[in-house]
Length: 417
Image (cartoon, rainbow, N blue to C red; front, side):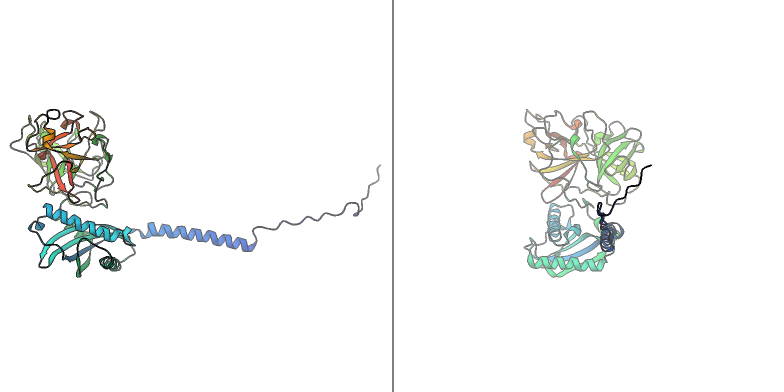
């Protein structure tokens, strides 16, 4: 047997292992906990602001006097060029005042309701729309709006001189706001004022961009044959009547076979109505497309809303000079003879003089006094195949085929039907 070997501590000194310091000491743990709690608190605050409080629409009726312009008789006609151009000037001024302020992101838009005479200028009645947290009160927001406006009157050079003592602001509910706006045509309830800028895409409408949101073209209607789907576009001109083209009813004039839908999609529609009566222009000539206009009456009136509004009919004296920016909208196919698109499309074109369109190399005299040309001579933009004799030429169509409304001063909106 082997004897056990003994070792002394001097030969092999004891090694002392230093205990690792704990990272999660009480102080650090407390600080980390506080940081987590702070992050959670901030997150809850953000969620509360955007979800719990939620923004709400606030509406105000503004009345004031402008002293550096004189009243014109046509200001009393809401579809006159004078009323529309002046209204848009006032609305742009309001947009400039509120959008450039510290709380400008809360301003949505404004609409002039009425222009009335005053011995020292013109009285303005208009609706202002804002979005604020639902926890705010109408009275508190009113004070904010008044403060922004009064500050602008002091510091900014405005195109119109507002008489400060004449300014009044009254809070109104959404029902009264709608009733006031129903007295005006061509109203968009979205925050978008102009659907496309003047320098917008030069694609054909069959490749045009889709509408940005509901309510961008609230008078656009889809006329559909029961069982056959979309056939033609139309424009809402009152709460019971549609303006469209007579050639749409060439195959079927029975109103009981037609329906009208509203909204930016055909399926599902925002609103749907049956058709009660169809009236073709008594001098419509299918061979020449002259007087290609028709009216369709709905069986039940529509209620005006954010997505359904009536279009403005132009003054009979209106003239569209060449190069006028106009917009064409519709549900046309995106390829030749392709299927109808479910989503409404829009594109910008320009008017072309009749003398140019009647040249021998264009339409060789086929454009009559009741017609106009719109598009581009190089054929970049087109509305639909049925109106184009050659794809490389501008669109030929009639005034009676189109519904028009003045927009943004001298700009005209041309809505394809």
